[in-house]
Amino acid sequence: MPSQINAVHPLSPSQKTSGSGLVQVTFRFYEELNDFLPPVFRRHDFEFACPPDAPVRHIVETLGVPHTEIELILINGASVSLEQRIHPGDRVAVYPKFEAFDIRPLLRLRPYPLRNTRFVADAHLGALARGLRMAGFDTVYANPIADDEIEHLAEAEKRIVLTRDRELLKRRGITHGCYVRALTAEAQLEEIVRRLDLASSMRPFSLCMECNAPLHPVAKELVATRLPERIRERHSRFSTCDVCQRVYWEGTHWQKMRGRLAALGAASGQETTTGTGEAA
Image 1 (tube, rainbow, N blue to C red):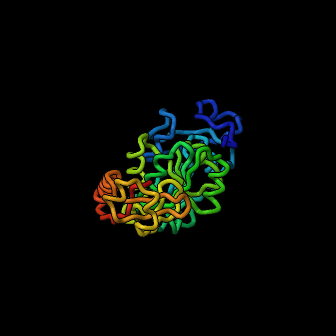
Image 2 (image 1 turned 90 degrees about the vertical axis):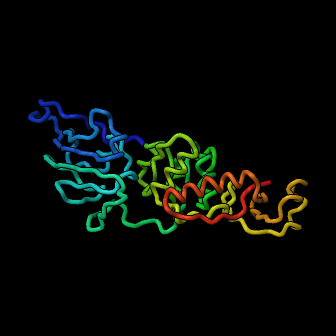
Image 3 (image 1 turned 90 degrees about the horizontal axis):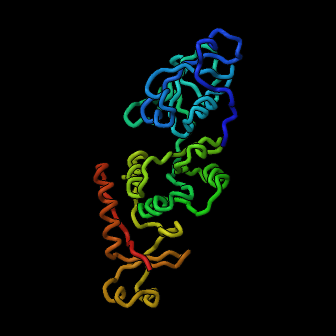
């Protein structure tokens, strides 16, 4: 979504004393938020010309930083909301989501956490969506899926938006989201599990990787006609999806996926339990 602010740019010396109508504000962005900024603004204080009385949300998003990536904003040392108005001479410090720093006495930008970790992934993250389903996380995905539909699902169903489109994360209806930095599916899954501390919540092979519906155990005789002969001969434990009718079993592909999830859990100091995972 295009920003609603059109006249935001670095201050020239003449603007500081001229009647340009803009106000002088000093910004500093910290840690990975710098990745979203133009190189000239990264990792140091900089002055910016802003429309008077503009909400800080519009300024930071015009600079390129989605509000979903921000955990804390301080203006002149006080924590503020995204709707706080900018005034001449303000000093604005913008922080990412914290992992080890306790900021409970301060004002977080989102008034509530999401009780259930559920996702909606954009059309370019199909492999990540399948990986999250494999790990047991409810993840809506379709290709194509419109940005309006993603925003609606995020708001109506309290889902975390996963995307590599920073403009999507700037939409007002999206309160929780992650800009996915990694490029490969395996690295993306590792990034999301680590960033959101999901290892202890993984329930591998509890959801269908194709349609996101719950899996449940099923007797072999009830699905025997849907199985290849070699699978009927070699395996005895099965689970199925009632929506798409796929049948899962513990084949070689399942073993590889189980190892991948176990490695993610080990990296976070967690053990994972697994269900039944190869499909027909």
